[in-house]
Amino acid sequence: MPWTILLFASGSLAIPAPSIFLVPPYPSSQDDPIYISCTAPEDFLGANFTLYRGREVVQLLQAPSDRPGVTFNVTGGGSGDGAKAAGGNFHCQYGVMGEHSQSQMSDLSQPVQISFPVPTWILALSLSLAGTVLLLAGLVAVAVVVRKAKVRNLQKQRERESCWAQINVTNTENDSGRLGGNPGCTS
Image (cartoon, rainbow, N blue to C red; front, side, top):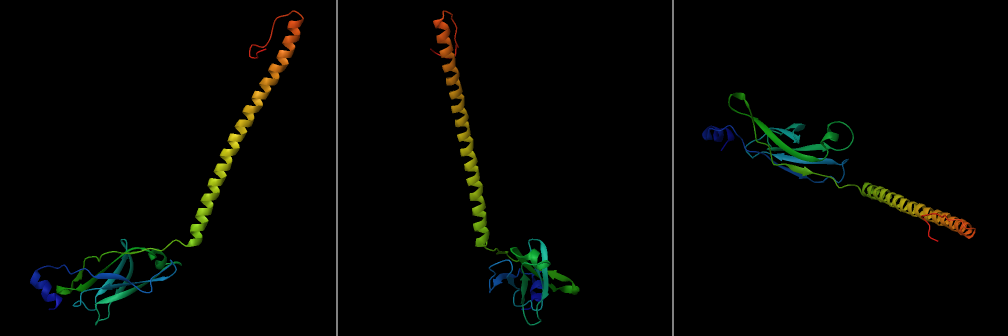
């Protein structure tokens, strides 16, 4: 049954959403082309299709008059619209001429998610940079602890030497009959 009769019989201007899927060869990097098929129901031949990434229009195509769908070729990488469209959530929609030559738009298709694996060299570089930062932070922490320990030991040594000198002076002074001494040092 032609879709115009179905629309007239149902009293509704809504037309069914298209199906969307990723077509092989599947992209393995952002430089690879992305092929996305968008297909209307069989009765909607020669429809005009729009591909969206999020809410942004990526491409417009018209199906041949004997076919219900199109295949979008979205080129990744580089500059231009392809660069903006590489990866993400894609939806499609189609439109046909309805009664009184008015364009009727379908609902949006379900989303198709396109993502790319992180290249191994980026992962290795990230991990090595993170490892280097952690190693440097550890070395700085150890250096600070060692420095504090050295300062503490030097201070203790100064105090001992000061007490030793005071004890010797005090003992000499005590021997000569005078009282005195350093209250921080024990004799």
